[in-house]
Image 1 (cartoon, rainbow, N blue to C red):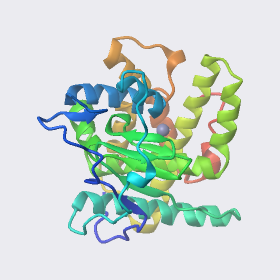
Image 2: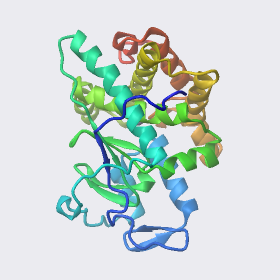
Image 3: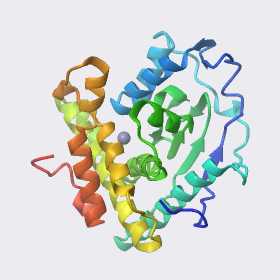
Image 4: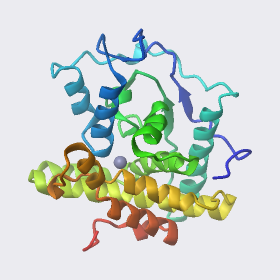
Length: 298
Ligand SMILES: [Zn+2]
């Protein structure tokens, strides 16, 4: 993916080193005052991000179920920008800018205003309007403060655990989270949340799958427009993203986690579904192509 020299977003908040990563040491990461191994973190991260477990639930599980006191907003240092020489931060800032330049005009074209989300870089744990965000929750979007949270060590995990590397695959992760922001702005996630409250677990999971696949499709819409405007896609990039989508489908993850697949518990969709919807977005480039809720066949 070609990105260097493109616009970088001002909406990146760098909270790394704000004290949220405490004093773990020894290669472990601190959780609620105790240090746990990277392997545990990896497993928890996979469970929460890919299986669509609510980050707060995951958090609670990690801290032993008792729930730990959430970090208070006032504990946070004032928002600051990442250092200009930080290549990885520049990359995510460029991807975020790219999503802004895609979704702004798309919203405007349908008479709506796109509110740009913030992207927060953190390490360890950080306060969010959705509770305390932790490395182990993986990248996530919090509608309460309209921010995407990511600990960049997640990319290392993608590489090591899922053999998914390459910057287009990394951009896809951010575009997927921004896709959740778009769903929030369009009122889709609110509707789904309300419907899920009166649904059986099976129905609720099915709705989550459609929400997740739509975010994948929206990531495709971003890729379509970004490429039209800035020719960012290089040979092998699409395959890279599809590879990421298929490596992290619920079925692939469940197989890896417990050696079997239980379709009713899918909340992100199967590998094939994720690939199909991303493809659809990147081929058609339109929000209307992403109506997973109307689709008979996912
Ligand atoms: Zn998602």
